[in-house]
Length: 165
Ligand SMILES: Cc1cc2nc3c(=O)[nH]c(=O)nc-3n(C[C@H](O)[C@H](O)[C@H](O)COP(=O)(O)O)c2cc1C
Image (cartoon, rainbow, N blue to C red; front, side, top):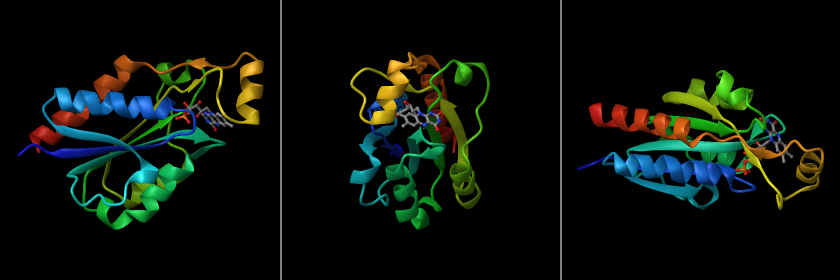
């Protein structure tokens, strides 16, 4: 039987959801079973062998849906391999260097068997919700800084690790 992986995410404007879908696609191409689901909608993680949790960054914190997901499922997550990703910077910084997890995520990493965390570039485009999003866009600082090549390579690492264990 192949491992079944949950790729779950907290998102406001959909950028993180698309990253999660890309991760799940790669896992499936590598022969695993993978489901990408919003963190808000997941009620049970018992049937998954491994979990990937991703979140957009808002004001230096993970999106609340991902924070709540980790709190709600802490016991089950502690018994499974977990990978984390953040989606945030609206510039090239994530492509240039490793961006460490924000404080709340560092705390999660201490408590759970987290195999890896990565910060991917973010995306903010016309039509994004919220007053601050509008201000960022008007100041010309929006854009799509996600690198799906890097995201795919990271997902392949997860697949390799699960298949070898
Ligand atoms: C109100 C607001 C606050 C943000 N705060 C941060 C932040 O603290 N750190 C960061 O790297 N990116 C920040 N960003 C950029 C978002 O994290 C980025 O757009 C991300 O890809 C959004 O993911 P989502 O579309 O899945 O919600 C912020 C964006 C907005 C609109």
